[in-house]
Amino acid sequence: MKPRGLTDPRTGRWPYAAAQLRQEDQEGRMWSLVGFQTGLKWGDQLAVVQLIPGLENAEIVRYGVMHRNTYLNAPKVLDADLQLKLRPGTFVAGVLAGTEGYLESAATGWLAGTNAARAALELGSIVPPQESMLGGLTRYLASANPKNYQPMNVNWALVPELPVPEGRKKLGKREKRPVLYKIGLNAFVAWARDAGLDVTEPTPAEPPRAAEETAEPVLR
Amino acid sequence: MTAIPSITVVGAGLAGSEAALAAAKLGVHVHLYEMRPKVMTPAHRSGNFAELVCSNSLGGQGDLQAKGLLQSEMRAVGSAVLESADASRLPAGGALAVERESFSQRITDAVRRHPLITVYGEEVTELPAGPCVIATGPLTAEALSGELARLTGDEQLAFYDAAAPVIAFESINMDIVFRAGRYEQSADYLNCPMNKDEYDAFYTALEAARSHTPHDWEKLEFFEGCMPIEEMPGAARTRRASAR
Image 1 (cartoon, each protein chain N blue to C red):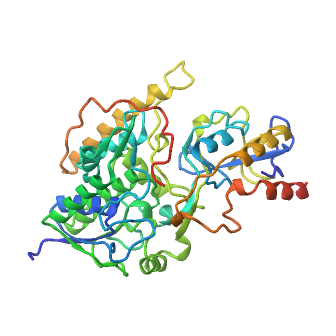
Image 2: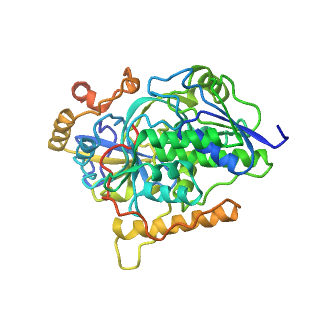
């Protein structure tokens, strides 16, 4: 929180204290709070973060956690097809691959299993499109900031943003997420079909809409 | 055994089970290794596959949730985990919650009954030859961790996480936050300036905030460099005062 050397362009001076954020993804859509590794409960964590000036409306896409884990520095060692750069033919999935969450484990397992089978069949490996959530996650694993890499869960900053219509400042979550959902699912299904995989056409009516935020960690 | 191509999968948790079933669906023979129940972990209770060691929720559903999109993608390609979750679901508002035993039993049955999957109840201590999936999870056993560390370099394998919150750029108020590096360093950081009152209010809230209660196996011994920020208010204040 030391302010030394940080000249605020609005005052021309160093502030009394400063919280710093470091870029985590290639596009600069996800920023982590430097030195804020934390095991605080999620509700309390959000409340504390929102007391930081400039973060009063912060949306946390990945909460701080601290626990025993075993995981690889994915951006250093993995490609987006989940293959180890140093050992072609060896794929890594789940928490060990630098993901967090049950669903993320299952989904990377599915991709790693598919790609390992394709390797055995002498077919090339495949990566889901970046508009899909699985494609966004595996691209993040391969391209995130490798400095102090921490496991990632899925979130909307992993898929490309929608253009903001002319005359609008930004789009609301409830406006854009259902659109991103459709784009992502359509892209994923088209990709899977192109790859010759068995695809079940998604039902247009999805399960009832959940509250906007999940209130508790879904894994540990 | 016929000469159909084969792969090896290490670990039959959510990732390994799904990997084995996805590979078998493409017609390859799968050799699946799971050390439990012969060698247990501090987190697992059974020898079943895809055991949920913590919450019984697979995340929020629907088209407002990132997890909801991933669930739909996985359903579209016939994921065994989603199929089992949908068959074992419990009412949980907007979340996809499941009844643990039947969830993991369904996956265990699907894996064990698959004619192309052979299950070995053994620990794997070396990286397998040929195409393989390593999905040994947060409590990967020592021998295989050692192999991975030797291959990738020690510093590429972590044994704990110490994650700070990650914030969506679009939710940051750039009328207050400024881009800069310290002194003449390149402006790689976003900086949130605080005056004394803001800083004091922040630390008071930090001291009052409650921590997540870890499972026994999750507990860490903290050391310099991975101290949680909530453990630090006193220390940070002292350090800061002496620095000024």
